[in-house]
Amino acid sequence: MPYRSLLLLAPTLAAAALVSCGGDGSSTGVQSFPPQDVTAEMEKFYQSKPDFFQFKTIADLPADLNWVDNADQPEIGSPNAKKGGTAHSFIDDYPRTLRIVGPDSNGSFRNYLLDDVSVQLAHRHPNTFEYMAGTAEKWAVDMPNKTVYVKIDPKATWSDGVPLTTDDFFFMFFLYQSEYIQAPWYNNWYSTKYSGITKYDDHTFSVTMPEARPDMDALVLELNGLPTHFYKELGKDFPQRYQWRFQPTTGAYVVRDEDVVKGRSIALTRLDDWWAKDKKQWRYRYNVDRIEFTIIRDTTKAFEEFKKGSLDGFGMNLAEYNYDKL
Image (cartoon, rainbow, N blue to C red; front, side, top):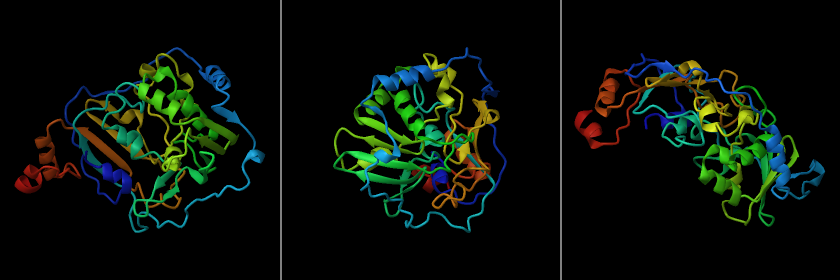
């Protein structure tokens, strides 16, 4: 899909005119649902699984942990990269939902909602393949005890300004193990690949695995957490209630309600006050202000729009385009 690499490195881009292309043009609107609060059920769930959800204090942390932050990794991006502008791209089908989990959520647009934009606890450096800090400030791997310890960066916040805390990782396990999300793969993975999570304070936690594995660090450091406050209304109507609600993200881009025009277009907008905008490994990335996707279902038409300059990029995957037509 065009522009996936744009979200990973985001060089400078020039603005151009957005191409409209069919559809009903309706925006998401805000569907009304009766109020509900899953907090009591969530707390009861934690209490029912005392071996999985544990609560300790900072004094209980092992004294011999080897905390690392890999701050010496070479920086990604360039200080010479200019920020601003609008990138114009296209997708050949409209997203079925803005949810990142549950029915119809695993579509190709999910990359722009989660995979390519959200900041995990840590990310693999593309050159050294060592982990570099994301929402984690530092971490420690205790292989003999099958446990990874994490300290969350106290500056890390969700895109709506709410701080990221240990509770959001507790809630992640609650939601992903819940039948409400109608996602059996998630239910199985988050129940069997992990054997427990322990809270030490609001920014310190550990996750334990059933067995020591070479990729044990990846199983923890590549977690995102989930905004507890956003999913407070979790219940049996989860797929419908959250169908067109954009989940707050730790990443630089958000989807605004007014930019969701069903059947026609959808856009990502960069946050001016993104918490990681001055953080090493992140400050020279995600430079474009806005990414606008128009629905163009026919590849030939999309190629013509690209040649006219209405689109800023086109994937040259087929010889028909990269050799015969260009």
